[in-house]
Amino acid sequence: MKKLILILSILSYFLSAKSQNITGVSKAYSFNIQKKIIPPILVVKEGSVKFSDNDHNGRLDAYESAKLSFVIQNIGEGPAYGLKSFVEISSNITGLEIEKNQLINTIYSGNSEYVSIPIRANQFLSTGKVNMVINVKEPNGLDCNPIEVSFNTLQFQEPKIEIVDGVFSTANGSDMFEKKNPAKLNLVIQNTGQSKTDGIFVEIASPNDVIPLNGNSFSIGSLSPGESYRIPFDFIATNNFSKESVNFSVVAKEGYGKYGSSRNFSVKIHQKLDASKLVVQSDQFKQTQIKRDYLTSDVDREIPKNDRKYSYRYALVIGNEDYTSKQTNLSQEVNVAFARNDANSFKNYLISTLGFEKEHVMVINDATSAEMNREIDLLVRLAKNDPKSEIVFYYAGHGLPDDNKFPYLLPVDVSTINLTTGGISLSKLNSKLANSNAKKITIFLDACFSGGGRDQGLLAARGVKINPKEQTSLGNMIVFASSSGEERSLPYDEKQHGFFTYFLLKKLKETKGSVNFFELSKYLEKEVVRSTLINKKLQQTPHTNISPKVKDTWKTWSFR
Image 1 (cartoon, rainbow, N blue to C red):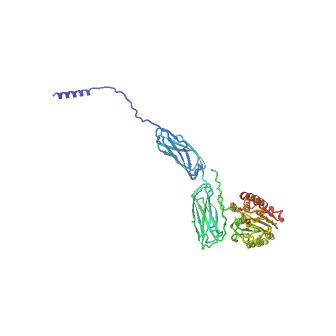
Image 2: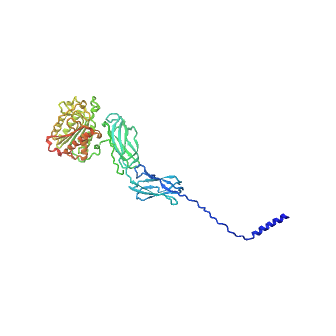
Image 3: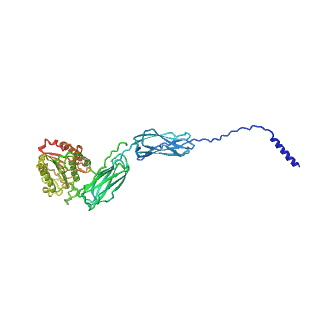
């Protein structure tokens, strides 16, 4: 009973307290719940800004790709989030393709980030200077200092893939192109334009019954301005080939598809080919100076054209180079280097530049005694038959004096043993030509008569040199001789001609044939002497022999 009374008393007390109003003030407290900010500090790493283009010349060219790169460092204590790079260009350069906005990875304190902005130039790129500003933005405005960059651009410079030269040669040591014997077409492909191009390949189309021995398609790859590439194309004409000439069509193509070229080359069956080894010359924005890589001399290319023809002009041109084929007791050194090339080039100038009709120019290479005498007699008969006639006689080859020092031209089948019976006496040659009654008689002799030849000679091999007797010119005659006294007539190896003939052709090319004989005589003497001293350390002095009959008029003679 006592427990019940106690419980009811306690319950009554709590109910009474709940019904009362109680008031009071608690002490006030404040709390800062904002997170503390630790900022990043962004800088460009010193020396890290670089411009890199494909050809590493520091300039952006049309069709070229490049990149602008730099390194951003965070030297602050806080991370850098949400970074972006923005590119602004203030120049009016067309044809640029640049990624102007780029996200950058988060850079934590003490770390760095490499940034690369790709740049490309299309075909419409203009020449000028690009001024560029790159801003790296941070969301809270804690940006990196701007990066200023400038670089030059160059509009498209066309490449030009040329088939610069092509020369035929035999592959079996002979100098004659024949069916069933391997031969070679040596080609030079060169970029003579002003920009690099790739994807270059060459195709050679050959006729039926001519078999390419090393294929007819050649991949070259790329060529920079001035760079060249050699292609040796080997072939053989079968016994079934029935035409007189083998004709090849050569096509060079490149990656752009419009800067290639094509050329045709032809070689005749039974044609003599040069047996001498070929000596070939090879080579900011200034234009690249292109030196074409030719297999032939400068005087053999782009020969001046003269449309006017002189029907009363006649010429005999002889190039005696190969003496060993007719005389087996002689060594190869006895042959006259480049004599055939001399003769063939001079013939081309007679026809193209000096107005000679093609059928009026007789050419014989490696001529025997009988052939030389026959053609000399024919030249004289032609002149006698034409009252207005003018004649030219050209000879490149060996000359020799007899025991009495009288000079002779040497056919390929004549030696010291039968010199006086088979050789062509210079005195008798002058008499024959003078008796033709031609109005003008011009003789060019690229030969010496001292017993020496081009570097080696028939008598020079025995250590003998003779000062030959000077022959008097007759009638209406002028003789241009390549050397004087005991001097030798020397080969200009680099130009693949004799020195005398090279400078003779050079003057005809420079003047387009419009040079009088006096100017030509002085030019030959000066240039041949100078060049032989520089290149051979030997002196060769051309001289001009004038007939008394024309001593007052010869200086004004010319071919034009």
